[in-house]
Length: 102
Length: 187
Image 1 (tube, rainbow over the protein chains, first blue to last red):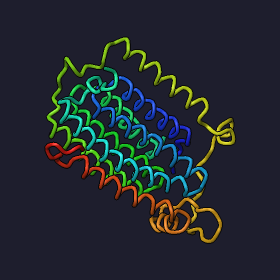
Image 2: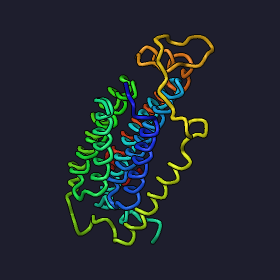
Image 3: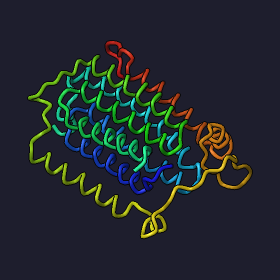
């Protein structure tokens, strides 16, 4: 039986969201920014499942299922966009994608 | 501290450590490998939360499909560890990012716990029942896959159809995006 409290799981989830946010802010490689986004979604998944179990309600678990579906689709489209951009600009760094700026 | 607690701490360290190493690794391939470690750690946490189906799904979808896609694109584009160009911007911006994200974590931890959930009385895990809820009552948490199936086919019938449609749309979008554009033709 688990004696770790739900608080531990929630703090872990928030830490994951924070790390993902940090990666989104400090990395310039768009691939790594997308990966950080996935990490944030994972943190949210952990939090949702914890709430789902504590509240004895399956809705949170089903939401995790939907978030996974959306994340998979999002990654596929994001990577396709990145490949298309790479063909044009020959770079995956976000600094090189400031089309609108100049 | 019992064995299950020890497992929680092991996988918590694996998840958070993998995430931090992912953010700070220079080489994108190394970052993807650390990301896989982190995702498997999250799957193990799902097992500790009694969601075996979601844990399997996590390994299959994230560690399997999504990360393989990432690695495939990294190797297709041949993104090397170009240290000079990919270094974590400048140190001032890096410190600002660390400050902002720790602020986010602090705000989440101080506000993220619902009031009837935190406090002096530590919340405990509920005792699970085997019954799959039926009818109008809310869906009860269950370890069974059939509970998921029941929920998806009744209460979440419309969302799952929308999700399927969204997958179709994203597939069509990816095909159009990665199609070779003929000369003179606009996207």
